[in-house]
Image 1 (spheres, rainbow, N blue to C red):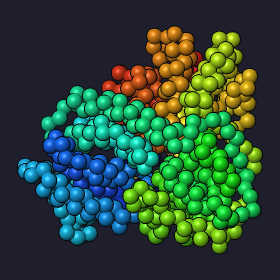
Image 2 (cartoon, protein in one colour):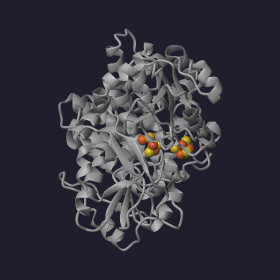
Image 3 (cartoon, rainbow, N blue to C red):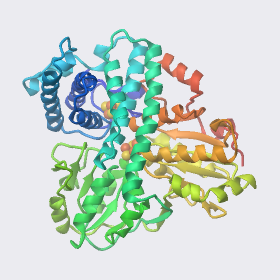
Image 4 (cartoon, protein in one colour):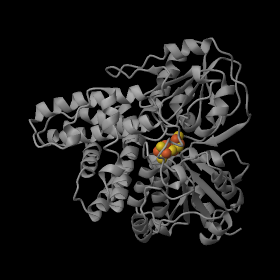
Length: 545
Ligand code: SF4
Ligand code: SF3
């Protein structure tokens, strides 16, 4: 076994990647990510002590967000960048050790590799299979760790927009330190997993505040799928501040900007509508990038995951920034003192390249985040009362490349006319271009936004519960058919559980990191289930034509 990772839905053979990642991660990159996580745990340990002493934790908090984000599926494949982050961690550990005067530290807080070779050697000793032998404890520790990784990603976007919340970083440290414990019990870990869900709600609310505070409340918007005849840059990932700065810097240059995959919802925000060169959305979900980037012709900017190892025909025009990285792609440096990043290289590059080739035409409609849906509340309530809407189906989460995800397209197609899909995340690309029509002017696919905007779906559900004067959120006519892929979906799931949502169906497969006993706890406590065939599931969930 040259590596071990089972954090995403595409884990090899449904159990884990042990030779090379299905995502394209090499063993060295996977192992160094393990070492980065290990170093981050050391930082969390010392930073907790610093917190107790009332010392400033800004640097450690940011380090933890960055380094956890780097280890998320498809975010960073750049060995040198990961090594550099580990070294930054060593410097920070030295600082924290000196500032706190702490002694009796765990290995992750004291270990320092002197060379790249030593890093790789050490990384082989600290992977999850080596450090936790009990299958159930390991499963719970990883569930918690992945939840925390998802939190870190959302926390980072909020931080970039200057929205910070101490309790979130404190929990993050508490969770990471708990995974170091050799005698923590399964019950204690279950408690932390549930607490993680609460912090998941908090971090998504914080990001919602950051995004809406700066860019306005998303509103119903038709997004163009076609192209114009100008050179252009394609922006992927989730970071709206990066997009804003790029748009500012492309003004008057003759370069257009398009969104890809999870960046699509940027079009729903009022602030982004003022940019005349912000043309539309190009292509679909992340995994289609190897086809779509070829025809786009211009440079592509990744602000976060999901990167697929590139094909030769476009690899010389891909850039990364933030937590994302790939060996050989130029990386646009971080902000210094909150000043905008410098996107001039990618803009100059775009000017030399031809305009995108059109791959589709038409428009898609989105922008149904909580504020917009609440404005439509009367209409929605009337439609429910009159029986025009009988069921809402939450189909949020991630898309992925496996064929069995056709299930979600078939499911959307088979739904009766009196049902409405509530979506968020890149899962939407499985059905957002289908001609599903509307119910009295309410589209049958309501897209709230990015995966973090699953928060919006929860706010909408809570509001409906109030309007219909129900005791329990589970009494609403809502079915949860969630698709997952990476660790942000884990925090979304834990957040929904915290809000009291039960009967969530998770697909296309249950996580490889759930041991049979841990899966049993989730099934018994929350009635979480998997999916089977469209027909059987519709029957099971009482969806009838
Ligand atoms: Fe495998 Fe997923 Fe881990 Fe990549 S992130 S190595 S595909 S389990
Ligand atoms: Fe998508 Fe990667 Fe999960 Fe943000 S872009 S939802 S998979």
